[in-house]
Length: 312
Image (cartoon, rainbow, N blue to C red):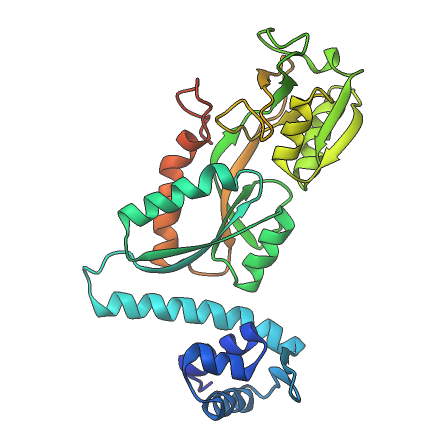
């Protein structure tokens, strides 16, 4: 039987996070010898070294330590959940939930979601990480976040997803464009004009794939990793773009006007999903957040003139 305690795991996790026994001691308000002793006993029980001690330069994870850290974080998370459930049956949802969100729609979704979580569950604290699809998968696998909102595109098998809304891509034009008043825009009518690409995986391949499916090849003039830079370039008349995420205002950061038009061609929509590690049992707090996303996400993504986004 393996004999180690959640306290040993907590000390190890904090030391790995801080990369320092001394810093972990300050964060946990526990003496350095106590933390060092607990981690040594944990290593002895497991039969492997988890940390490399650097004289006067902190600690770093061994390969075995990096693998064990993921499982340790999951055990600590579930241990906190069990403690809360055992403490009071009517305590309600509480605790800390680490959430990740894809960078382009985080500004549109997360402020409202965090506010609604705070209203419904005052005892819950949300921490937020924003990034690319690759960033979020790495954070999920590392135990740094428990759930993520991302595109249901190119996801590995160890990530469990549930689609919560679909986004229909639309053409973004400067307000002065010749097609700005058209009811819809076919992509072939823009093919000779400069295209501004949102160059962040998996959006990059998704948007270019829309053209390939129609036998078209856009004339890429500019590209950017950020949604607002793309919108700003379009607003200045430097070209057109295709976006799936639409802010609720048709003005850019520098005050230019843009218009959004439906695509006249038949094109593939994209799906937003809630993701977590398939092998990790979700906490009650995570399940509550997932329920809120299923309930509210479509409304939060809807354009002003649309009553509701298309549900998955």
